[in-house]
Amino acid sequence: MLVLGLETSCDETGVALYDSERGLLADALFSQIEQHRVFGGVVPELASRDHVKRMLPLIREVLAEAQVAPAQIDGIAYTAGPGLVGALLVGASCAQALAFAWGIPALGVHHMEGHLLAPMLEEQPPAFPFVALLVSGGHTQLVRVDGIGRYQLLGESLDDAAGEAFDKTAKLMGLPYPGGPEIARLAETGTPGRFTFPRPMTDRPGLDFSFSGLKTFTLNTWLQCRDAGDASEQTRADVALAFQQAVVDTLTIKCRRALKQCGLNSLVIAGGVSANQALRRSLEKMLGELKGRVFYARPRFCTDNGAMIAYAGCQRLQAGQQGGPAIGVQARWPMEQLPAL
Ligand SMILES: Nc1ncnc2c1ncn2[C@@H]1O[C@H](COP(=O)(O)OP(=O)(O)OP(=O)(O)O)[C@@H](O)[C@H]1O
Ligand SMILES: [Mg+2]
Image (tube, rainbow, N blue to C red):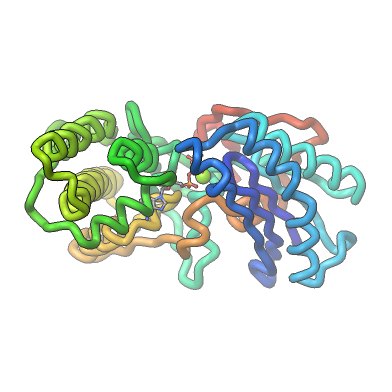
C-alpha cells in the first residue's frame, strides 16, 4: 500500500511517500523556523499562511523524486491533531481535496502517534511492547506501548513540556528560537560541576514531570551571574550545561522507573528533544545497565516530518481504518482515545 503523508501541525510543512512493501520512497520538509525566529516563537497565523504556500509544491517534489503518479497512491494520511488549528486545517483540507479528486481514502493521524512510531522507519525498529518517552515542543509523556493504538499514559508534564522548557530557558538567556539545539550546542563547552540544578519531582514516587521551576532556577542563576558582572560566554555555557544535565537526569530517572514499573527493558524516545545527544548517551548508559535497548529516529525524523505521518497512516489504512470525507482537526486529542489495531 502506497500512502502520501502530510504534516502541518505547527511550523514545519512535511510531505512523504511511504510504501508498505518498499518503505520510505521520498520525503520533503520545509521548516518555517527562520520566519518565526524574529518573534521568539511560532506565530500561528503566519504558520498557517506558509503551509498554504508550501503544501502543493512539496507534494509535487515528493511525487517527482519517487517517480510516482497520483494514480499509484492508495491513500492519504494527514495530521489531524493535536496542534495549531489553523495550521492543521491546511493539511486536512489539502488531503481531503486530493483524496476526493483521486478517488482514494484520507485518514487523520494523531501527531504524537506519528512521533512515537518514527523509530519504526529505522533499520532496526523496536518490537512491542516498549516504554516510549515522548519529548517534544508541546509534550512530555511516558507511555506504555503494547501495539499500534494500544497506549497507556504512565506520566506526563504538569506544566512545561521538555522542549518548551529548553525554548523558554534559552529565550530568557537571550538565545535564539528554537532554544533546544542552541542550549545543546552551548552545553558542549560548559564546565561540568560549576553549577548543579535541581532534578524536579525525582524525590517522590510517580512518573509525572514538572520543568517550570527548573526554568526559573536557571533564569535566577543566570541573572545572579550577570548582576555580579559575569555574563561571559563561558558562564552562559556553564548554565546551559547545568540546565541540560538537570533535564537529562530527570528524564533518565523517570524512564528507569517506568521501565521497572512495566517490567520492560526496551525504550523508545521520540519528538524533537530525542535528538539531544546528551539525553541519548544518558539513556543508552541506563539501558546498558538494564541489558536493554533504546531506540530513536534519525535526527531529521525526531522533529516534525511527513514520513512519520505517512508511516502511521499506512499502518492504520492497511488495517482497514477509514476516515471519511469530513475535514476535522483537534487542537487537543488524548492519544489513549485512538482505536487499537
Ligand atoms: N538537540 C536538541 N536538544 C534539545 N531540544 C531540542 C533539540 N532539537 C530540537 N529540540 C527541541 O524540540 C522541539 C521541537 O520538536 P518537535 O518538532 O517534535 O515539537 P513540536 O512539533 O513543536 O511539538 P509537538 O510535537 O508536541 O506538537 C523544540 O522545543 C526544540 O527546542
Ligand atoms: Mg511535533
